[in-house]
Length: 328
Image (cartoon, rainbow, N blue to C red; front, side, top):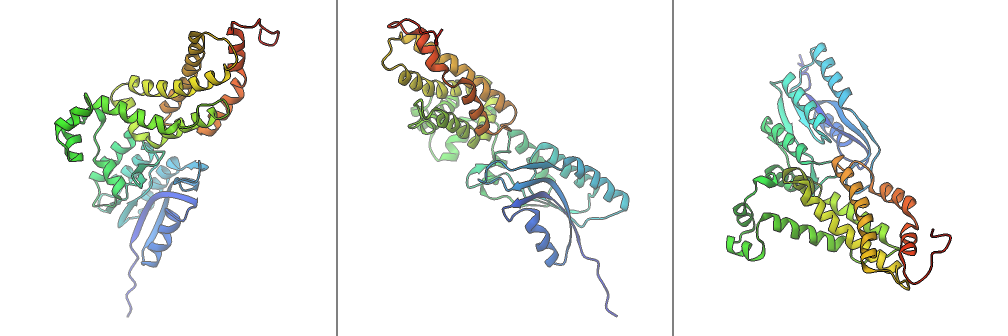
């Protein structure tokens, strides 16, 4: 008589992306064809995957996930394997940890989805990386790509030594100190290099919005690094980086709009400095929120609020003509 064997149950803790052919949409049919019984536990529902398709619509599933785990436990469901994939926040890592606690005998497979092609995804923070390290320590099998392996092995900035850098780069300490005074000097140089690339050709009145958006995108592309510096060292390091970026942008705009006017250099510098603090204040709030806002919308709203105000300020401060009624 043919003996029927119950299929292995695999709890799949992962996101469900609409467009992108990835995550649960791919995992469930593959495991089914392998003869397993996959049990989907979506951590978040996304309209698209997070790799270059704009900002996806998002429905968080952390609360549902906890309720589902409790329900499975009440039913007496036993899992042979727990597989985790994309975990978009610390609360979702906690969901995976809860599953590990509830089914300690299950084989634990962790795919620490955090980045690709040398860059972390926009949702990845230093705190999330730390939590992912803890989850990986409990796994039987870890499946990182090269980028994710690098993120898991990185240290917080305040724990990195010059020897760590020279060993990783294959250079001696003398070579490092020939170019940089210390690690923070290296951080400042790296930020300035990003600044020059971000603002190339974007310092005019017609292109300042693109320039500011490029600054947002440069910060976002280096999210783990920026947040590491911001949280591990001091906010002053990040503030100085942003002040330099935005002042260079605004100085070019003010100089262009002041052509044909007699405006004292100190007054032009004052206008650029005033807007610099406004721009950086917005960006720091955005960084503190883990960069959750859409930079395009932030820049668009800012443009609506301040449109024409630089011209008006220059008109009030010019010394070669009397004020018009419009500028008063």
